[in-house]
Length: 238
Image (tube, rainbow, N blue to C red; front, side):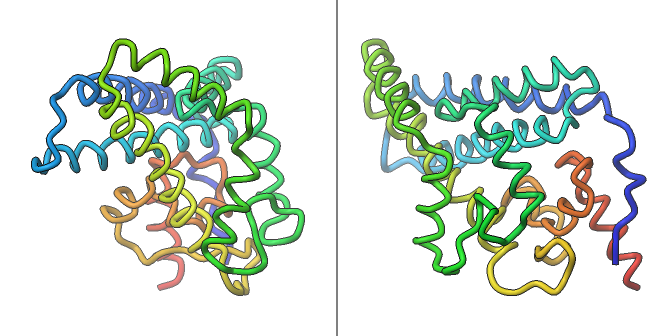
C-alpha cells in the first residue's frame, strides 16, 4: 500500500534549524571531548564516543535530507548546508554523494544500485558500500588534518573522539540504513523493509531511517517527520 505524500508537500522551515542544530551540536561536543582528560576507566569516555557517533550520523542524515531538497526551500542554502554537513563527516563530498544516492533510489536493490551487494554478506556488503564512497583524496585530507590538529590537541583524544566515532557511524548508517532494510527479498515496489514501530529506538538507532520503506515511499519527508509517515502507514493497515 502506498503511503500518502501529503506529509511532505512543502519544505518545512524547521528543517534548516534542525540541520544546523546538529552541525553546531557536533562541533560543540567535539570541542568538549577533545579537551577532556581521557580516562578509560570512566564511563564518560564511552558515552562520549557514542554521542559523537550519533552526531556524526546526524551530519550524514542532514546531508542526505539536503540531497532530497528538504532542509531548506532555498536551493542554495539547502545545498550549502548539505555540503558543510558532508564535509565535516570525514571530508565526504556532497556532490559525489548526491548522484549515487539518487541512483540508489532509482535502482533499489539491483546491480545499478551503488549501495547494494547481492551477496547479502554483511562484511562483503559493508566493504563494497565503503568503496563506493571513500576515496584516497578523502583519506589524505583526514591524514593531513589529523597531523595538524595533533600539534594542538591530544593525539589519543583525536583518535577516540574524532576518528573512531566517524568509523562507527559508517557501521551505524550501513547496518540500520542499508543492510537491514535491503537484505533478502522484499515483495514491495521499493524493495525495502521497515523496522517495527518504536519511535525512540528508531531515533536512537539511525534518526528514524529504520523506517526505510517509509523513506523510499515518501523521500520528500525529512528524517524528523518519518515517524509521522510510520504512524500513517500503521493506521492505513488497521
